[in-house]
Image (cartoon, rainbow, N blue to C red; front, side):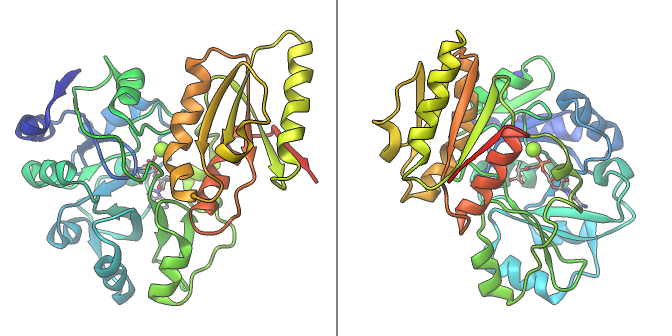
Length: 334
Ligand code: TXA
Ligand code: MG
């Protein structure tokens, strides 16, 4: 895997034109890109990530002209949202054009599109001159990469190049909004809050969040270490976490805990990751994937994560990702 600096974006663009795969920074998470219109190039993404073929990719554009190559019958609502939130962490589901190969959309007649708010990413797409299909640049099922080193860990030897950039500013994937239904439907909570979208377009459907977006059906975001999520009031959860730590330790296990700054001092465990302040959901969203990866690095036998975040604004995406990462292992303490 070539490691390219920010002044070598032209090399990355050449690799894309030649049908290669290039990981690149965005404001949400690092993406693993290929020419969205070249089925052979897109297939390499699925192989590198070990991604199920029915899980469609997000196509990244650098202009509205580029958007029109892949999407048709774009509704007025889409333009209102683009004017407010692009470039930025909002992915729109639109009707797709015939030039898009089936493999890019997992066979669907719709397409997911976004314009990332990252100068390197935009320059890269512009130079490549084609829309870039890019899922998050992690092995399928693992936490998304928010740092270049995360991409190196998962993808070295599996892709052609990585553009070295800064840590992802937001650190949470984009919000996915389906505009092919009325009212528009939230398919994945993410970096742009539902509240901001509603303020812009008035009405959004949130029922069945995991049903329609194929990606939301799979186990996701999981560290290799088994993870237990403890949900409940912040006045009770730290004590519950300590109780669990003691139980696991008595069973001879090494325990890691992902915890808010406020609860941190009450916790006694083998490895601790402070995810941020309960009063700063943006900070927590940005550190969440690093926290999940920390458990593997710390080589603990089991991880416990505090789940006391209110499900408003960034908290909606935070709790969504934590529940997916924990799978069945959720303790409710009331
Ligand atoms: O922030 C992000 O969105 C990052 C960066 C790289 O842009 N990308 C990302 O891609 O998170 P990925 O592949 O990890 O997640 C894409 C999500 C999946 O849940 C997928 O099922 C959904 O978008 N999706 C893609 N195309 C779709 C479509 N046509 N209809 C419904 N859901 C779609
Ligand atoms: Mg992903």
